[in-house]
Length: 219
Image (tube, rainbow, N blue to C red):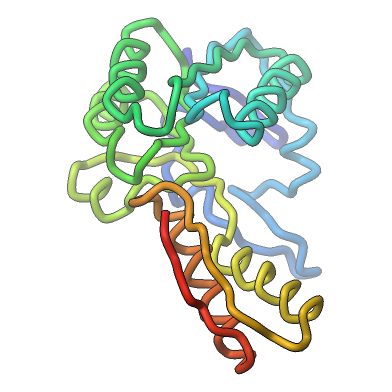
């Protein structure tokens, strides 16, 4: 259990090494993932009803509500079962950890995790790695150094370039407020790498414009 066979006999799931999901390119420049194009991946359906667990942060946030809908729609399309769990607030790091640890004994074929902080799920991910359960890290990145030191194997990481997102927000402000001015930055939850990356990308770009002053920055 826990293995899926994709196009051209390529298996995805348990036993897949991180290097197998590394991005490369065809001679025409088309992105490839584990030897498969995006179109190949989109065409994959499950050959049996795999059970997946998706751990999001909190469904009190519209962003994670959208993520939950996406998981459910994709699971229905691909012919798998997915359970989506969350905690009440982004302060509930221990509760999120407990959720994952409890779920590991429930026979899931793979887990998809969006940790509240880069390290709060490390103990559960150690257990998942030891059990041979594939771990897909989505959005908020697991700290790669902490993961490596703990022996955690991440099958795949799917995340945005948050520094670029921050820089793009700054560019919009520069274009729409050409006279410049004073700017305050609301960073998001303290300790989240994604928020820090967006803040740094924004601040670097806005200060480079020369006519903006960052007067405050806080979580």
